[in-house]
Amino acid sequence: MAKTKPIEIVNRKAGFNFHAEQKFSVGMMLTGTEVKSIRAGNINMGDAYAMVEDDELWLKNLHISPYSQSSFAQHDPMRNRKLLITKKELKKIVVAVKNKGIAVFPIRLFENERGIFKLEIGVGPGKKTHDKREDIKSRDVERELSRLKR
Image (tube, rainbow, N blue to C red):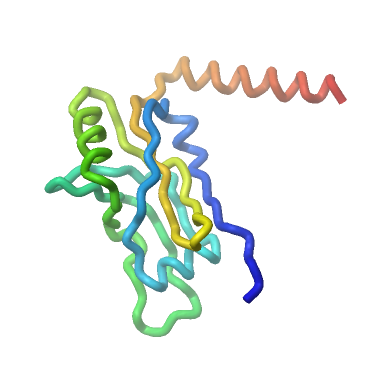
């Protein structure tokens, strides 16, 4: 079997809208058609967020498009997906979320060396408008400097 390039899908909105104070790498319960659809790149993490319910961490609003080559057994594109995390890490997240304005959001979805999909989640507050403007300004300055160095 030929080695394929590992999959990595980054949620660019997360870096723009949130400060990631803590990061965790967690597993995710997926069905077979969801895995095939992710490998095809049919995933949208823009509006996704995680929430603690009944001592379990759930990912909501993650859109994985139905797999086009599948038969009648399709998955629901917007279903809630359970995240697999240790109790110790879950307690850290629960304590952080009790503070006002702290969110749990997906940063990137990647495939580890064993071929298993992992989700990197961040815990932190949302950015204010002036923070976003500063990020845009610093990105523009870096771009201009790199152009001048050439």
